[in-house]
Length: 255
Image (cartoon, rainbow, N blue to C red; front, side, top):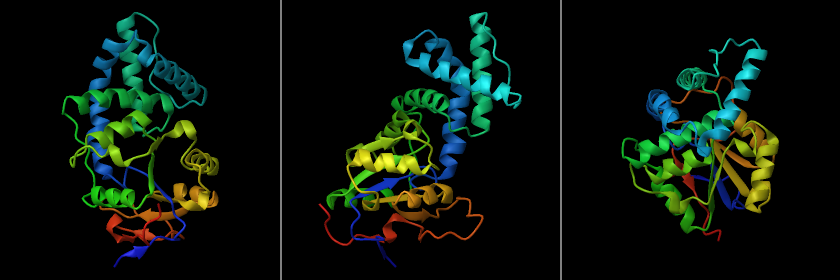
């Protein structure tokens, strides 16, 4: 049975990707392995370019913090260049194995995935209800935005190369963790400001309760996404549950 949106005042929908728009398995079993297997060659080709300089600087700073915190990351070396590249690649794989959400890693991954999307190796897997839903929301005048730990580049590439075609025409904004952590209340307040909306006019859909709690504390409306393959919440949630975007019934045009 369809459910109405939490309030008729909703003017924008903010979507998580992993476990909400796309199966968890696509990220962990396709995207992450692709980055792992291509990072070394990518760095060999791009090491001296300005395109990755900021990412490498961020990774070195993160490594120093990992050492300081005694997390025992694989060592980085400074020379010769081939050994330095190899050590960075090993460290990147170490971070991927720990599903780190840091900006340097996510930015570098996005650049690696760009090649896979552009040459057709990668096609983003999305749930079947997603294209029709976002097309319908756009017809009703709703702003549609994405908030993911993946870089904004990776997000746009994802929606440009889905199994259902290019869906970027329906997406207004791509927010990544440069705006703040997904579990920080301030991040959602900043997003509302960028959207020029009151927080209560934004509906956030995610599979992570901690993210929904932060969004709710910021004043956003929330829905908990329960998709096939998702990890069930460890405790009862106060957020209304949906298992498909088709369950959401929009109360008329909001344009």
